[in-house]
Image 1 (cartoon, one colour):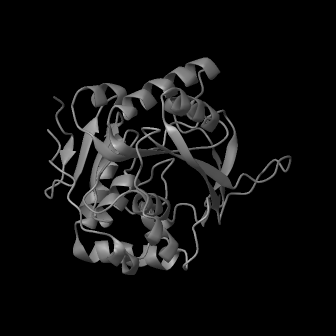
Image 2 (cartoon, one colour; image 1 turned 60 degrees about the vertical axis):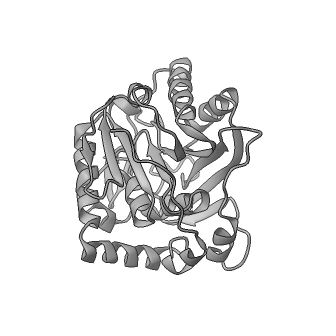
Image 3 (cartoon, helix red, strand yellow; image 1 turned 180 degrees about the horizontal axis):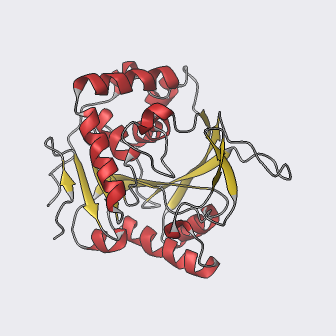
Length: 291
C-alpha cells in the first residue's frame, strides 16, 4: 500500500510521489474519471515565445521523444494501467498535440476503450510562430473515451447545454491559455488553465466524484476538482511539482483566495459558472482512498 506524499485536511486532495504505473498497481481503488496530460514529446531544441520573450521549448528529459516505438510502448503501458483504475462506466480524457495524440488514440483503441470525442481546444491567445514558415500553432486536442464499449458513460448534457447558452456544446472549445493569476504559487512548464479542466470535470462527473491525474504536475485537475466539489488523487515523480500542487491546494483552502479564484474563472469563461451548478445532483461516490 502506498504512503501519501500529501493528504489535505478535508481528505479531498491526495498526492502520491513516484512512477504513475507503479503507483497505480500498488492499490485497489476505482475512479469515476481520469484526466491525463502526458509528455507531448515537444522538447526538441526549438524556441517559442513566453510573456513576450524568446524561450526554449525544452521542458525536461521527461518530455523528449525516444522514437515512435518506445513512445508508443510508454503510452500503451500507462493507458493500460489507467484502464484498470476506472469504474466500468468511467471515462478518461487525454490531452496532446499531433506529436503524441495519434499514439494515444491507437493505444486507447487497442486497450478496448470507446473514443467518444476528440475535443479541439482553440487557444484565444497562442504564442506567435517565430520561423514564419508554418501556420501558427494554436490548438491542442483532448480525447474523451469510455472504459467499456458496452457500458454507458455519464455525460452532463443538460448542464453543458445550459452553459453554452441553450445550444448543444460542440467539440471545438475556444478558451484562453494559462493566465498569470493561475501561477501565484509557482510555475509549471506545461500547466493547463483551470477553465479547460473545469469544463471537462463538469461534463463527465457529478459532485463527490473521484478523479485521478497520473501526470499531475501542478495539479490543475485537482484544484478544479475541489473548486467543483469533487475529490482528487494526483501522481507525479517530481517532488518540486508535488510541492507546487500542495501550495495550490493550501491556497484555495483560504476562503478569500478561493472566492477570488472562482470570481476570476467565472469572468474568464462561461464554461465555469457556479450559477449553472444547480442542475447537478449532490452525489456520494463511495469510500475514501485506502491510504
